[in-house]
Image 1 (cartoon, rainbow, N blue to C red):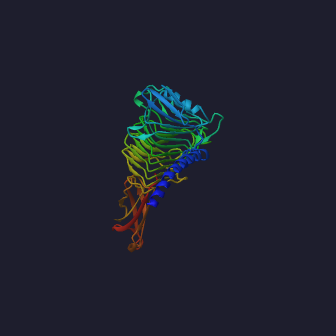
Image 2: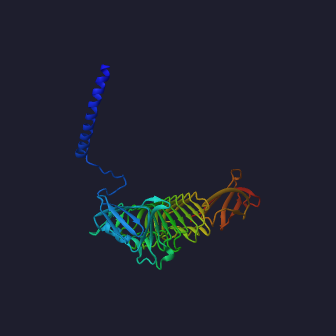
Image 3: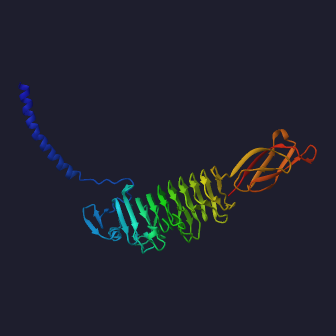
Length: 415
């Protein structure tokens, strides 16, 4: 009984101590450890003003971290106001449809991130008869010079090609602007122009993007650099999907360097997957070309030192068009739908033709007589797009052989 009374007395006192302790803890925590704002590892400019922009009906709202809210009926004007307010900017767009009525100028460190997926995602579309040549114009810093590692992420960007009267690109990069751009999880739909126009060097990365239903003459990704200085190079395009849309072309006066295309799909349309003319030190690896007119275009004078390896080429007209410069060899191996080498044995005599099974005339055919027929000489005397012809000479009687002998052969072609 005494123990119960003491416990009861202690319990009553402890409630008061508990309340006092909590109040002291809150005071100490607030004063000594003020609220900390955590940033994710890929927020590259943690000191940049952070805005949230959302749409309600015909009105667009922007809210800063400190709670200040601005409103406009003009989406592009509101975004431009946020960009112009400081030296760098980070914007998160809520889901909903945003209509762009003029170009947005980017000339400083920035991050643009959308929200959601499917029906609940950030959707930016051009208004009918959009007046400018692009939606986003990426310019140098106001003081001149480059800035680094901008991000575009998680948005649907619709060019409304049926409502436009002239070419409109989505992103135009101007010379001397930014390097190491990141385009991630973007959906480019119905553009009456190019999606990404690169004119400046840097390790740009285009990853997990969807390009769909462009006007046929406009490639999704292009280079348009006219001088050698700062030509776009070290560009990686990976895990993207191109539907009725050409993939890439260099419109510049000089070659681009070190472009890598890995694990992309090019599907459908009277288009070319990749035009690798005027490109050097490039790789096209493990891509699928299905239902496009032409898979890859090469140019003997300007396609230098590349690799076409492990691709699936199921095209309507031509898997690989053109040829390469043999002073700067291109490796073409292990592709399905475009065989570059073949080998087998055949029973043949002098002047016989043997089918090589390659898509066009091989550059090299190597032949030899089976080990049991070592007294014979064999060489290729002619070849065409389907067969090669051999001469077979019998050393033992100094005559051309009319009886069939086992011929080992290997045929190889360069695009």
